[in-house]
Image (cartoon, rainbow, N blue to C red; front, top):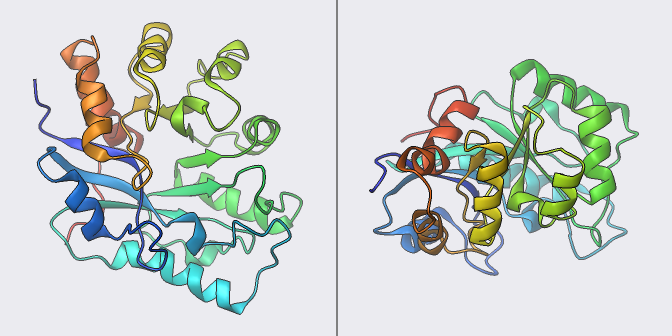
Length: 256
């Protein structure tokens, strides 16, 4: 069985950070022959803030870099279906979220500079995300992930990437019954096959999506991992494309 509408739900794409190369043409080279027809894409982290400086303070250079990174995805002209997500940082620049942005990327690791959750602009951008019904791909530390879900994200659909492996661990989410919440989604990028199978057995196939985490994961390999699982054809169809379509309301991204 080869699904006809394969969408990668987790890919980084930009021109400024070349370590490793991750422009659209690089993604297309790595996904060639896979059957992938489109991807949810967000700017590389290092095009948004200095992830290597925990004490990082924003400045004009990084604001220009961030603006260029978010504009790159909505200005691409290509038959490949690019589904751009806007990468939010501490300027919480709600006015820069355009109608072409289909969702939000909200990301940091524990050794990286922190989001200013106490900034009133944070609540303002969340209110706009809620108004537009945009999903949020959230990658944060465990306690901040649960805070976001419990206190900030009411009415917002949240995608926890990697089945939670970088947000605190798959089992931790399972013990807290977070996966059972109807507004919590996940993706399969860099996730062992047995974790994916366990998730589907416990929670069904409606809120889990194929992702590659390109350039850190290879799209062909990550897709092959899904196709080799002992899942029903309908479940595989949902994972590799159907669930992304439903999450986004059935629409496509920007097609040149």
